[in-house]
Amino acid sequence: MAAKKDSLKQYRTRRDFTASPEPKGKKPKKTTRPIFVIHKHKARGLHYDFRIAVGGVLKSWAVPKGPSVNPRNKRLAIPTDDHPMEYAKFEGTIPEGEYGAGTVMVWDSGMFKNVKKRGGKLVPIKQCVKDGTIEIFLKGKKLQGAYALYKTGKPGDERWLLIKMCDEHAHARKNPVSTQTKSALTGRTMSEIKRGVKKKGKKK
Ligand code: MN
Image (tube, rainbow, N blue to C red; front, top):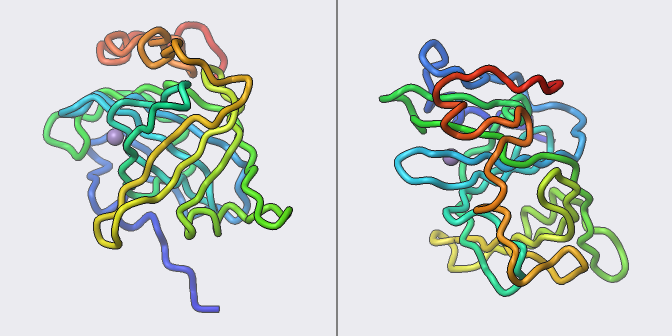
């Protein structure tokens, strides 16, 4: 097998770690705990970054409207650079002029379980990413239940959709993105993170 290329190169190239508090991260990890994290990111436009651990890195999508718990809502998810695993605990403010400048909150985090089956067999998560058909069960602090990420569109103009799958955790009217606005990691609001208010007595 050819030497695995460092999929974090693009992530590092875009950033100046002497100016940004974001983690530089190490090489992609050999073993990966199946964690997910959703960052709320107030950059030029507010969006949510949906990240899942696959192959030692955080595979990432920018979701302008954030996740929905209503299976009728298909949320656009634009693939972005792989992020290092260390990014899962990052919360803070990226200074003006730096890539992604703005405030970053850990809006939700937890574990996920791959539930994508074909012919009765579980499809490895790496293959799901390649196929553009990801189905995972989230066990987060805010989000629970099965979510799908499907690749659509033509090659070269690919876009993904993030969709809540039908299960007992689906809900037609709830909208956690607008009602649950504090950090899952520190309990802080966006403005408290921006102002650098200390963490609210929560364990890391
Ligand atoms: Mn972002």
